Amino acid sequence: MGTPANRPEEAPYSRKIIVRYSAEIVDKPIVYRLVKDFDLAFNILKARIFPRREGLLVLDLVGTKENFDRGIQYLKESGVFVEPLSKRVSRNMDRCVHCGACVAFCSTDALSLDRSTMQVHFDPEKCSGCEICVTACPARAMEINLL
Ligand code: SF4
Ligand code: SF4
Image 1 (tube, rainbow, N blue to C red):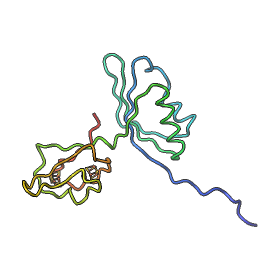
Image 2: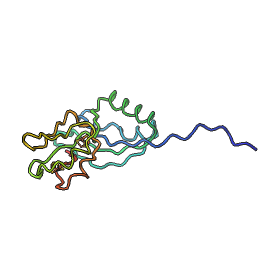
Image 3: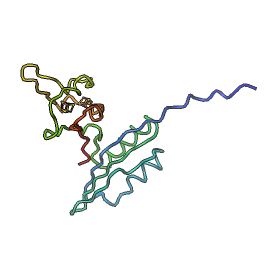
Image 4: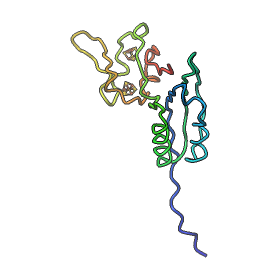
């Protein structure tokens, strides 16, 4: 009457990615393969086709971490350029009032306060894309760019 010794359920893994593809592969069923071969669910957050038929997709992918990694590998091997969406955090300088509220939330020191000038600096190279500052900023100066 014991229960079967199942493997523990893996927590769903979810990531938003930007996918860019060239006109040569625009007709490949790329997203379909992600679902069928790698068991990944997706939401299309944005889709854009440019005049020469290059395309851009912003996808929210959900699955297991292992399948996500395999799916991303498949995309890259297919000639698709993939990058994480969450890295596209930027600061709108027209809105930033250098209040410093974001600095304490930033775990990577991408946001830092220069005490000599009382100006807040943003270093995109250090940004992990955690997006915490986006909600922490009262002036809504930290933005997620969907291109
Ligand atoms: S919280 Fe917003 S307004 Fe304040 S320093 Fe940071 S980015 Fe600028
Ligand atoms: S997204 Fe995260 S790591 Fe990047 S600046 Fe904001 S709080 Fe720092």
